[in-house]
Image 1 (tube, one colour):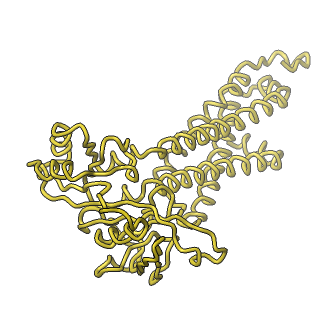
Image 2 (cartoon, rainbow, N blue to C red):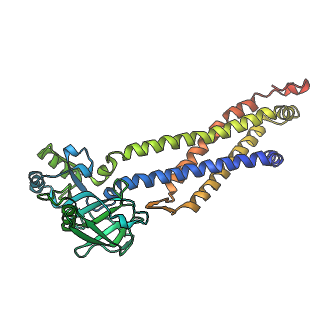
Image 3 (cartoon, rainbow, N blue to C red):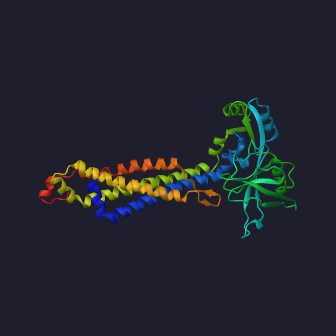
Length: 372
């Protein structure tokens, strides 16, 4: 360790630069993963963080909640199932918010989510405020709406409907759109305001409370009709169209980052080892054992990787809870632990080429000035 410390002291600038580079790469990895998680949540948050344990789609919707429509015969099949203890309709529609809501006058499309029962389809938690207790009240997504804000939906026929935001739910967007959760009767009125010629409003999903287990009710409903596609809350979130592709794209980027850290570290120490070959050969010639030189190298690798991870995690902790609109960077210890172990193992593995170079040194070369 003494030999490693003396060498780092002599070359403190180059070692400091490497430490800074590794720290920034670790910080980018952690923040990138936090952002990817926040972005995926903005796709599926309304499904992932709602109260219904099972959601029933129409099969032809291909598990896209906005494209699902449950017909009365399909709804009756669900009601007739002995595995269904309780159910509630969920309606989903996209409505353009008033232009006056934003200072620049730009149009914003919001998702309106209607539910019949707070225990079957409402946001599972509120960050602020309360759940709707009367007609004309709604829960909005945090970062998109303000508590007490009133939004007026105006239809093409001049019909208007005012909704007041009484609660705010975090991580509850659907399809990266501002989302309003309201009573199903208000949802029907909002839908008819958007399309006044409609004869009625059909539910998009049916939320189900299983009589026994989610698996049992799913099996029973699938056996009852091929037109029904029941999914657990977790499956509905995982199978949401587009969310998986976004997550896979971020995983590729994170994998590249994870490859760069050990690559940079390994190349750095390999170059350093080549540059100091004469000094190492001389140390071997005067009696220094190869194990001492290898341990010095490993101490340096551990210091650079360990220091870089500590600084990177510290920067990540400082940026946690930063809110970008409705997206929030959340500090996650499991992510930190995973990348700490992975980068540590890969970093040490990347030093194997340098270790082999040290072990291959021949003390005899010091007698004739060889460098290889």
